Image (cartoon, rainbow, N blue to C red; front, side, top):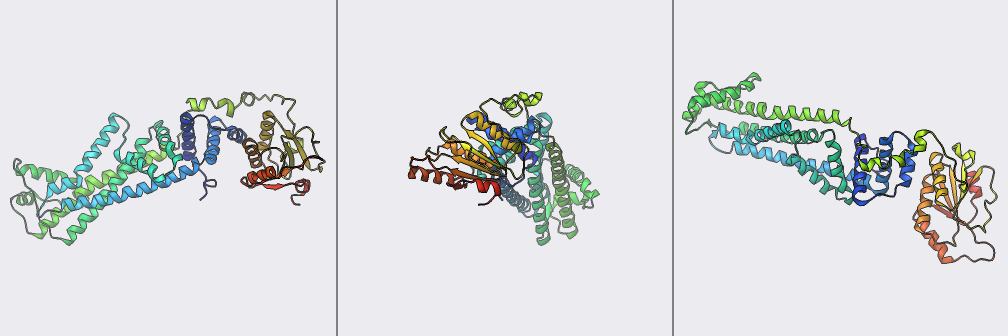
Length: 461
């Protein structure tokens, strides 16, 4: 889908705004006059205008498209990590039941040992430090950036981290990811364990050199107490002791130990990860609605005057300088069928304005920076339906003129370029005229060398 028609979410808007701020801090201020003007036109408080400005710059410079690619890369990275989790979970199951007979506590350690160790580490870091940058989270962010394959995405990952850190949402987002992946791995292990127990005959024993049988009886029954409440089998003391002396060949003993192993995996492995994943996801969803920009940052505070001018905040409108052309009231009223003619850097020898139909308004000749800004401000607020820009093809089509033409065209419903004929007695350079046509072709604008008055008045030739 085209990034220009993709509606960004609240998080996307904040994310892009933060990314633009980081980019300007690293590479210098961007050319943002048109972005600032459009943000002022759309209105709102400073945070809203900053987001409108950033969105326009992101669309112009390809950062919005880079964000879409980054998110696609993040999804691909997540899928890759999920595949790794499934394979890892299956590997845990094969490691646990890969010996004959099965040492029950060795199998339990294979299934839950690493999981419980990392879970304890996560909880401890959460209580002590308040933040937890998990290895899986860093891997996911790194893979997301690599899979995006877009140079514009360099500021996106740092911008997201900085944005979320302000409300300490990193731990909940990464927590949802980590617990979700461990949940998937343990579910994969559970499925493989059940499949192996259903298709193979296993005997269960416990072995020790320095511990007593009473210790294993107590440990087994303590671990099996909670699963027993859910209906899983719990070996009795005699069965536990007998399993320590020799391999029991009774099917009832095998089934009891198998049920105990599955129950312990479910209660102490899967259920805690499920609850923690749900908790982190709820905290993430509730917390992201309160995300906001830090307007005290220098990258935002210096834009306050450009986006919320003092005259606007105080309700004072200064008179325009004398040299600015005043747009007639019909244009200022925002008529949906309005038509506007403007000249671009025409010399004084050309009579201006030409004879105009009654419905066509004259916006004067743009020959100064102030006149350009004034007209652009007016057209941003009240865009005309049709705009004709008169150009002198005797001048070279420099980048500044083409950028202004493009900016004016974005403020009108339809635009036509009028390459005016030279005054009598002067010859137009064919090569320079070709340069104009070639340059304007890149802007996809309709270019004519005849008067556009009929088109301005009626909308057709």
